[in-house]
Image (tube, rainbow, N blue to C red):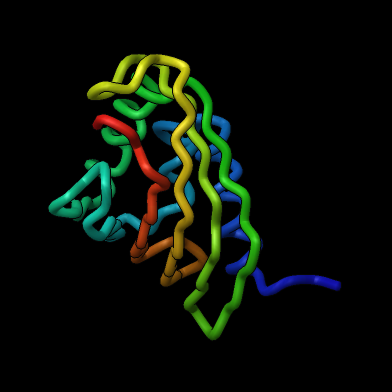
Length: 136
């Protein structure tokens, strides 16, 4: 049975990020006016708000810090142009982070809310709940 096209796009987007997509490969998922918000969490205590150029820059920086990452989408609901996802993320550190050694696996349970325009992500809001990080 076919899924809502925006759910399919949201899942493809998370698969691309899992593969380490950057640059044009990542940009093709986003509307040119896209805004991404990550609400306060263990890694970004003040949260962060990014426009598309900043999203692409953060993806490049992320490749230096995370050796491998995986997003597992557990649930997805769509209503019109909006999609809500329940996701588990795991990421293996490529370099030490705070008191955590390279090779340490981070894990977060995430609620992602996406809003689409013209078939592309126009807004993304993440609520990332990291499992205990240790001595970060």
